[in-house]
Image 1 (cartoon, one colour):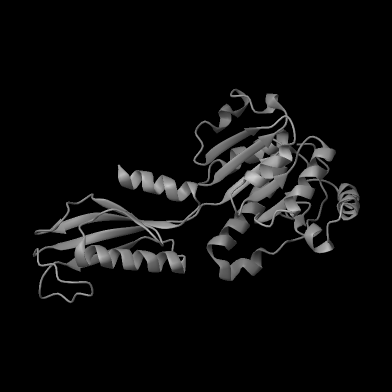
Image 2 (cartoon, rainbow, N blue to C red):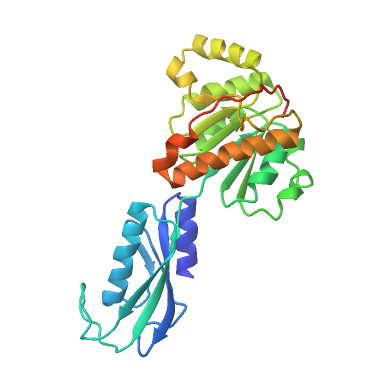
Length: 288
């Protein structure tokens, strides 16, 4: 079906849209209940009947996209020559109710290092409608058996097995991705940090580790020519201050909560200031 492909295309391209469905029809109308179309800011796929009815739906859908509205709406249109029209007369004689369902751009998260903490974090995030990228240089961390816990994921899971130079994946991530660096190797973490802060398309960059590790990384990143402003893009340690502990599951819960705050800020930009970076009360030295 055309509208299904359109929804998939918008999601893959990280573009917002609106799914328009004919909810009900009273009397005569161009399309039956259940007919669908998809509206983007610059395109329309399929049809709910054309004419004034469809033009109103497209117009309102694009207003919803522009305003970042995420709550579905119902639009009622009378198909009578006595009804007020903005885009031409439709005199089928019926009345149509349309359901306008926003198709927002879902968050994208990349976990670099799918060890103990990384896998626990993936288990939590997989329950949300996001694009989830799992990256590891160790093939044994990405086996089908080990990732079977994600088989019922709501998220779209993308597995990147990169034995050499996993930092190359950073350049392949969708714009607006939240990158979480928690590999088994501090040298690999450092290389990922360097590449990540040179990529201006990432939404956030989080690093797991202790204050001593971060001090070394700051010095190394500066020696490699990175500015203080660029280095400051890295948040470390990551997590919610009130969630303390070194167990992988505890760390994963804290990091997931930290991310959920940022997802909320992306959906509601006016409240973004409430999700500013917070210092955590405990530094976590952990191997993912």
